[in-house]
Amino acid sequence: MSIEIDILNGDASWPIAEPLLQAVWAPQLVAGKPWAHVKWANADLRVLLETPEDGLVCHVGIYFRTITWNGQKVHVGGIGGVSTREDRRGRGYATTAIEAAVHTIRANEAVRFALLVCEPHNAAFYQARSWLPFNGEIYCEQPEGRIRFTYMAPYVFHIVRAPTLGTIDLCGLPW
Image (cartoon, rainbow, N blue to C red; front, side):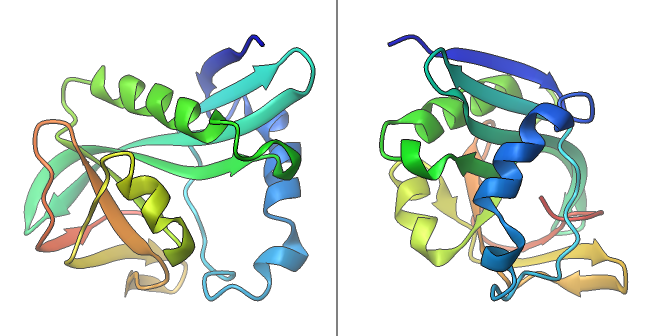
């Protein structure tokens, strides 16, 4: 089986990614989540994984931003919007797409670590792929102002470092 991996501009590739994201995160599925009202950042880049048989099967958004960690500015990479077609899960697509995203993040020499947030049922998946729990506080912007982000658990990935304690301000919308 062959897999095609494209890493494309986030805004330009939205029309390609949108049907998959709408299927995985359908409004009726999101409505009951504690984070249903959260305003999310748009991806800077997108990893799109396709197979000849199935078309687009997996998406990972890539984000680059200067945040603050314990009051110090730090350039980070992030992943979010990890989505695999329900009928194609368990085949390693998300792992492959996340590895491509991390490889892309590493290529940005200014990045010190990567960051993601996930629901508790996905924690073991990320920890098995070397993501470490961040046991500090996360803040971000929302339309109503700066908030403490407690809706999902944060995880970090070692690029130059992997801080697991302290206070992170995303200095913008979460991803």
